[in-house]
Length: 189
Image (cartoon, rainbow, N blue to C red; front, top):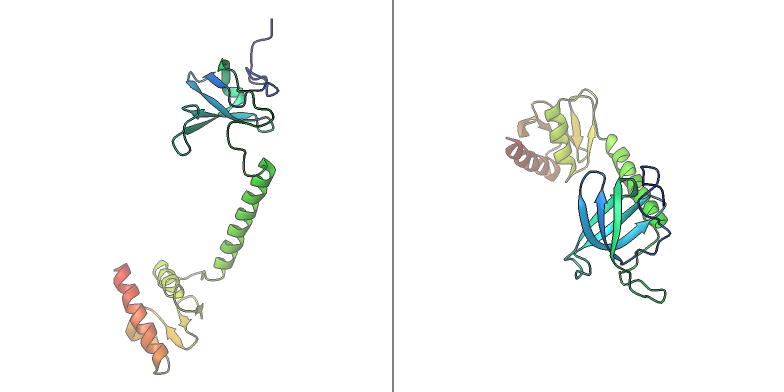
């Protein structure tokens, strides 16, 4: 008789041809799930069940189950003969490619976050930083010191950050900054 399954040894073998088989899985946590084996991924030790089995695209639920959590696996319907082709859609790319894309996304997000750091002013009040960030969405801004900043290269804004505190040469830039600042102050209350 084969040994009983344990955390180290799953209740099934990844070598079994289970893809598209209709199965019932009992987990060590007491759950019982039925569906078609959509993915059996040996390197990460998990399988994905599609329920209900054979549901049209967008109508199925997919449940990922770690192999170590499987108490028993019963094959209800054997997988169809496929002549090398699965009844389910193939993954659009290999799992390694998916991981590489995920890493690329994380790196892009980190690069973006590092770019945003240059706009944070140490010692600025929360209100000042918030006003700066809102103005920066539509106009170039730069900090002069921990309390004041320059907008559009010409207009300086100091506490209490009201349109009357906008200092710069009279012209369209000053009018624009005052107008946008008024809208920002209305937004934040």
